[in-house]
View 1 (cartoon, rainbow, N blue to C red):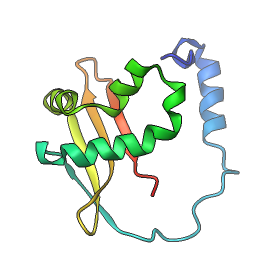
View 2 (view 1 turned 30 degrees about the vertical axis):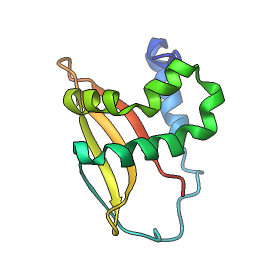
View 3 (view 1 turned 90 degrees about the vertical axis):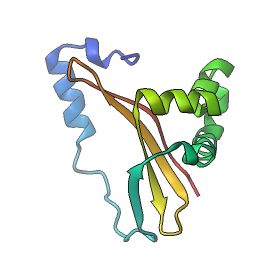
View 4 (view 1 turned 45 degrees about the horizontal axis):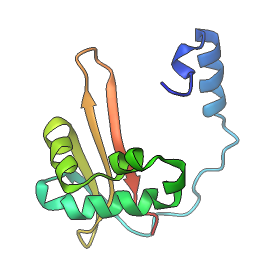
Length: 122
């Protein structure tokens, strides 16, 4: 990992996990305004997924190199490659609009790999 987390001692990693799981974090007290469903993405979802990724990551564009940003928000071609290489799912509103997405893959070692996790901020 780039943050050095995987290179720390077991004690350091456990300390971090205890910090990340603090109970003083306020939980969401109101119900969600809208229901959603999760389903496997298809090629037909390409435009909606690219829009979701772009909308979610646009505020952080300056934090990326142009190449890294392009790799994050994808193009139709790179989306088709990701769809063939990984499992891609979408969260859809009750109206059928894509409101979130994530791609995942389980590696031979048993580790998981996540890419392109985004939720439309609207």
